[in-house]
Length: 357
Ligand code: SF4
Image (tube, rainbow, N blue to C red):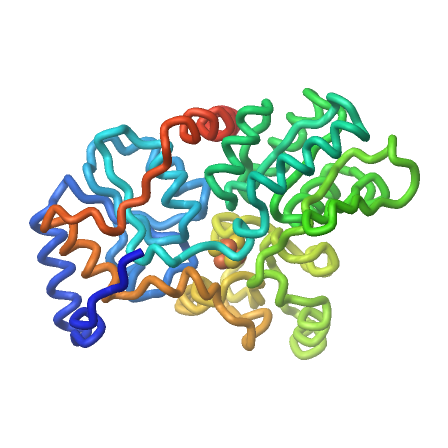
């Protein structure tokens, strides 16, 4: 992995902005810059489109024009975009070290061990489902075994469909999205088991044959920071307040909230609420900070002390400027490429999801 040259880190904001704007003009339609909602303001300012994981995957898949797609997000998102775009389109991650804490909690080796173990316990009754926040290798395993990807926007629809195909689901890597989704569909917590990849242990209550949802013991370091106490504190302080959180939060937090949903749903629910509604929002604070500019609603951080996603925050203006210069100079340093076999298998899972969404 190549380090960003010092000269970019020393440039003023004005120099970086000029460089980026000039590259955008030179590259014209050959360039598409897209950014996840959790990116820093300084980066979002240059994005031609912003969105959550599902929207960005759809935008990347639909764009057949841009030769260079600069993905301001994290590693698995750039991998997904590479797999969904044409061979002559290149996808870049401005800082290759921008991984995802959650995606890195499941690898294909652990998944293979888990799958064999579960087959011994449950036979051929399980569909694997992976959150889009997972590595290409994990997506490939899931695609090869008849499963699909999900995002926080479509998880209920897809889990519901999956349960018409198989008796059980293995949901990875985020236990919270899996648990919140299954619970919302009426599946009791007693029918959910937790698989611990580090020990191979399967934790469940009741009878093994009643288990319907097997949750991988993974989580997001950002959404794990919210607790029911944060909600209780704000409700006490502002009795009229409404709480909305992301489904990567623990179930106790989701159940104590008024609403929950993907980042896109959070934006829509707040935008559609009556003028003056007071909201506290439990998701990455970069997004919440931007939402606070909304003149029609009063917005609070659910936890003002929570750290924004460290890896999303790795991408700053110097990385974007360096990436664009590299493209102009024919240097593909920040290009993210997934091999052909992994792409073929992963696309089975991704395309199944896009068809069902
Ligand atoms: S917010 Fe959580 S899930 Fe999203 S990239 Fe950061 S660590 Fe991964």
